[in-house]
Every structure is written in C-alpha cells, then in structure tokens.
Length: 416
Image 1: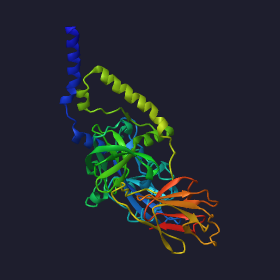
Image 2: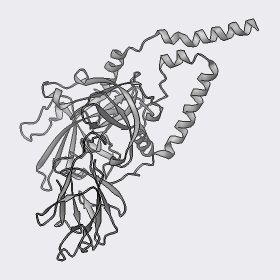
Image 3: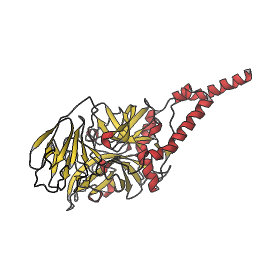
C-alpha cells in the first residue's frame, strides 16, 4: 500500500510540474501576428466607379509550414458594408487586397499597387450577413504570412486570457507602415459564451479585449496563439464579441481547405489543480465527445437575413426610441410591442390603397426596446433588405438607419 501511495504522489508531482511554467505571452503574440493581415476593400457602383472603401483585418489558414493562400475575415468587411446606409456590396462589385504596405496606392488607378499588395477573391461568404464571416483566396501564396491554428470556441472557459489582434483604424491612422510588427494586440478575458439573437442567433464569445473599427475580421487568440474566434461586434465601451470559430472550420471542411486544428488548451493552473490521472483522462474524453458533436450544432448556411448590429447595446443599458419614415415622407413613432404594416385599415402603420404591391397585412414591426424586429407576414410581393427577399416568418433585427422595402423598391421604409 505504501508503495502504491508513493507512486500516486510521484504521478501527482509530475502532473503539477507544468504549474511552475508561465505562458510567454509576448512571444506567443509576436508569433501569432505573423498570421494577421490588413485588408483594403473597395465597393464599386454598377458602372465600375469606386463608390466606397473600407479597412479591416483577417488571418491566414493552412497546413503547418505552408505558405498560405486562404484568409478569413468578416462578411461586413468583405462586402464593404456601409452601416449609415444599411448597404452591402455584392461579391461582383467588390475588390479586396491584402496590404503589405500601408495604403500604397497607384497614382494612376487610385487602387492598391501590385508591388505592395495581394488581391483576393471571395470564395465563401454569408449572403445574409449571418454568421458574419467570409473566406478569401489570395491571387498568389502570401510568403509574408504564416497560417494560424484554430481551436474550438466551445472549449474556451470563462475567465481565460485572450488577445485580440488586428488593425484598428484609430491606431493605423497614426502609422505609415503595415507588417507583422505593426499589428495591434489588446489583452482581455472571456466574460461568457452567448447567443446573439439580434445577429441571426450567432454564437459568440463575449470578451473585454479592446477592439474598434478596423479590428473586424481579426483573430481572437488564446494564450497558446490558437484562434478561438473572429472579432466582429463591439458592444458599448466595455465588451466585444467574437463569433465562434466553428462557423469558419465547418466552412473550411466543406470546401476541402486544409487548416491547422488545435486541441483544447487547458491552462497550467488547471493541470496543477487536477493532478490526478483519472481527472486528466476524464477531461480529454469530455472534450473529445463535445468536439465530435460540434458539427451537428453549426449547420453552414443556417443563418437569418438581416443587418449587422455594428453597435449592439445590451438590454438595460440603453433603450432607443424608434420611428419609421414612410415612402410619402410621413414619420410615425413605433410604440413598444408589435404593430402591423400594410394597406388594411386595422394596420397601425398603414400605407395608401394606391400602393397596390403592398399586401393588406404585409409585415409586422416589434419594438423590443433594443432593436426593431421585422417579420414578413407571408406577403404576396415580399419584403426586401439589400434587394434580397426576407423569408416569411423570419425575424430580422433592424437599428436606426436601417431600411426595408415592401412589395417594390419604391415602397422603402426607413428606421429613424
């Protein structure tokens, strides 16, 4: 018995050894930055005239030791989304470049120079915006980058240390260079896992690492440099949201694009506390079973059409009032609760009988206090956002500045 006890003590001591080691976070960040890029996006009008430009971040994926060709970013970056007009450019009217030098534009075209950028094409993007991601393919292997490993967001624990990497415009405006040494890193912790109902029920990690405009599409990494999420939304001044990495890995799997997959990253403190072999095995089995089930939880393309809540505010912090401007110029306040839109006299928001393309009860608007929720009620001619029809019965979150059309493009209603 004594010998057995000594064996157990030795095993426990061996398991506890890593607790004395500390994660060299500066080194991890330095290495991870080599996989992050700055993106320059231009949206073009139908006559091929540049109409809008946007800046965002992205990260490389690929096999270990390979020169990456594929990159991940946000939908609202790749579509040059204009929040003030609630407008996104389609893939045929967008050009995207990986910037190897900060805004080195051609004197002739006003677009990025071939010598200091790599153009990309969109190979996968959410047509509706949810989940908010896009996959790009570079015109050539980008030797200046290294692929990053991706870890399951589900395996991330509340309170884990995380780092947001990217190219925030507020910082880059002060710099004339772009490269791995110029990628900004901000540190924080995971506050919780949550589902953003206003963003098509997207699974996200809520964290307090600081991000701002330009960070979108950049990776959220753990203490080992693994990507655990895609930084997407800012919430007031304290928190940010990174969409689950599972959305990205499932799309990569479906397209046959290779990438490095990281196992669950258990902290050294946890290992020391769980200095029992049985516990270690149980944890491994637990994560293995969870990861095997993850594919069933994230069906690619199972998204809800709508607008990107770029400045999402948690309930109880700020309650906006909503009004809608009708096609004839009338502005009508939207009370709390649900109201109907249509030509029927019973509709609280009534359009004239002359608007023949509008159904008697066309759609409803529900003022949740946080967002205005639009639902098409099975209208004959449809309800449209960005020119795309909203499926009947589907909830779409609108914010101030959003607009939608009922029946035809002439019947545009704007949230104000």
